[in-house]
Amino acid sequence: MKITFQETEAAKKQLNKLRKDIRYDTRDYPIGYITDRFRRDGYEIPQYQRNKVWDQHKKERFIESILLGYPIPLIFLSEKGDGKLEIVDGVQRITTLSDFVSNKIILGNNLEKLNSLKGFNYSDLPDSEKRRFSDHSLRIIVLTNASLDTRIDLFNRLNTSSEPANDAEIRNGVLNTNEFQQLIVKLSESDLFIKIVHLSMHKTKRKGDNELVGRFFAYSNNYKNFKHRVDHFITNYIVRVGSDWNKENKSKYTKQFNDAFNFAKNYFPDGFLQNSRKQTPNARFEALMCGISLAIQIQPELSIERVYTENLLNDPEFKKLTTSGGNNTPQKVKNRIEYVRNYLLKYGK
Figure 1: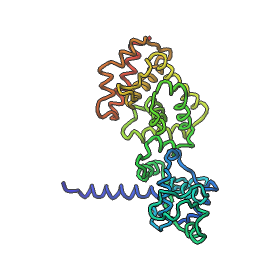
Figure 2: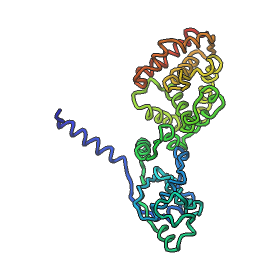
Figure 3: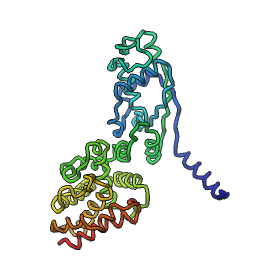
Figure 4: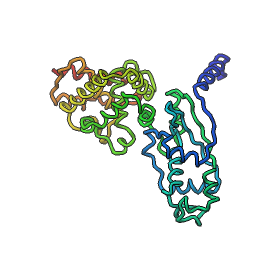
């Protein structure tokens, strides 16, 4: 199919617009400057990167690469309003450099070429090598005034680990000063949430609990406005609510959470959010917890016999709505949440 003139012009317009959202400087910082700034707390490590730690083998190979004069991948930083630089990509490289020049790393059997340095720390190096190491410059990309959407997209694209940062980890890092996000984190750590939502250690470590609470609020209160891109939908909702935060909001959202999760604890069987594989799928969680929240907003004193909630979990239509393909289309989100809401209002009292 031949591209039309109109399509070409639309593409040029989009490219020009999106390019304007990204501003950055390219800088060369000596390792001595980078590690000194790190010791003076001049960097901020995003929360979603704090669980990713290099083992001794990776640390030694990285140090050896610098000593050998090999090129090092770019480090990406982002300017903060307080003068700090947020480390977008390069946390392990910067912390490894800092640990090495602080004599916290002793080189060992992981050196592949410089085996004569086995047992050395930084202070043991010849003075000429210490100066050369400290003066060695690394290429840095510093983002300036990147929009929230742009930063989230860059976090996704720049993360180079074998297990890239997920939406919840990114959100937790980018929105760590947003008071609504702070409440979401607090509620996900509450005994009430932990008792009802059984997540694996791996999912909890990867902020799966934060993701579910964020989904609970965004869909319960705004599901009719969901169009596409779940990550943007949840993030934009949290940003909007958090931008006008006050004590009343904190009380309102805490009550909404407690009402829904206490209802679930009282009227649903243990493990009701899990499927047959003992997992908690997002679609099942959204349908049940958001449906519960909508029902008790309509009928605050709602109660229901356990037999009916157990029947709901075994209902073929419910299973179809929460397990079929295309789970995140707007219509399917609406259908599964409202199905649970209507069921509870029909059989409750």
